[in-house]
Length: 489
Ligand code: GLU
Image (cartoon, rainbow, N blue to C red; front, side, top):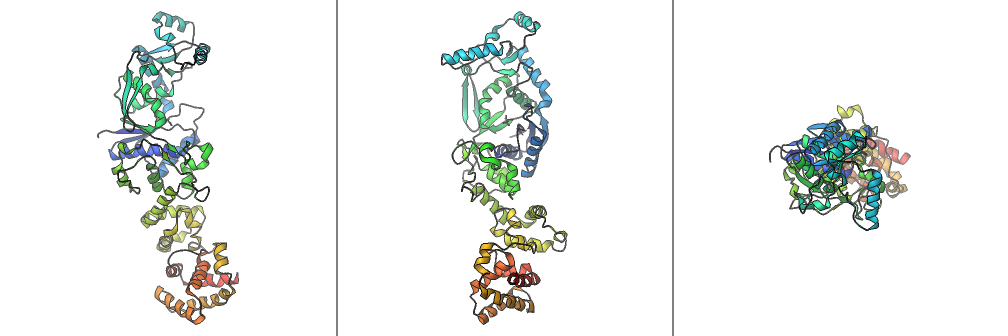
């Protein structure tokens, strides 16, 4: 496929939410797959609802996810004159007309239809005004809207949607819809189509809610003599109760920044979101960027709505378990060189970063983080569960302390163990292991008991990576000091 041009066209009414991110991801993937262009257009014509903060939030969200755009951001509000000109051109061609019906008149007609239990549709009163009548009304200063002259008769707008297949909308079910308001402001249905034509959009990949506009927009395209793009409407993402996901109901969990703030990796997020309503035949669920770009096809978008398991366990998991498991997968598998910048960001945020981590302790930190990452689900875990590997001021988990350190026996042998490790000639895995064995036998302590106590004393946690590796990674001085201080405190 040549010369693919797609766009992500958010209305900046809030931050980037997961539904928007999903639309952006599908467009981005499609552009990258076909070596096309991905345009970012901010649909800010609804001035009251748009604000700079929301726009910035969207840009930040896209950047964080790694969805780079090739053109834009363009702002729809800068093209209002062009939208009006398009409406004028349609009037010139006899495909649109000025409608002078007042709100009061229309309300009365709507009310009459309601009383008679009929579906209201504008009756086309002004469709048949003569040029003279129009001039007269205009000259008398009457305000007018501009409506599309929808073809009448038995025909229909028919188009193929890459997801929903052939879609048909009968002309008789489309009223002569307004494209410019009485105050001269173009309507969204027009602006959006005119912008897509100007930007040369070849594929419109957007949410299913756009499907209602498509037949109308096709009439606009045809009226303006523009080639039709391909359409692909994406099914919805619902919550486990099959309700629409919304900020009101689900709070911050609908926002991309929530995941950034809670320690998710951007690519894990992309990988998770793409699977909400798209799949490969073999249901692969982990993709590198190249694999995903290669595998992405519009035909893989599912018609059925997908479910985002928001807070599935009523609090135990703070988001969809699948997202957590994908994040954990990347945390465990990705090359350390790629993971370290993320960990760095989190350490800085938690005020745990030291300059030596950039210099002489760089490799050490990488080894330590590699050691502990196997159990973690989010980046935040590195600074909470993993804090003992980064600094001396860590908390001992109360449950672990009760279970492993409360026994008075432990307080008796712990300082001795510290001394014997301090005296070891070589502080390496082999020597540590044989020293521990000797110590166990001499004192008659069970291995599990000793390991539980030592692990808790030096890491604050009762579970963790390989026991001996913990001791070698933390280093002799650190281990000895912690074993001594845990019983004196
Ligand atoms: N601005 C619209 C929205 O945010 C986009 C519609 C479209 O992609 O055509 O829902």
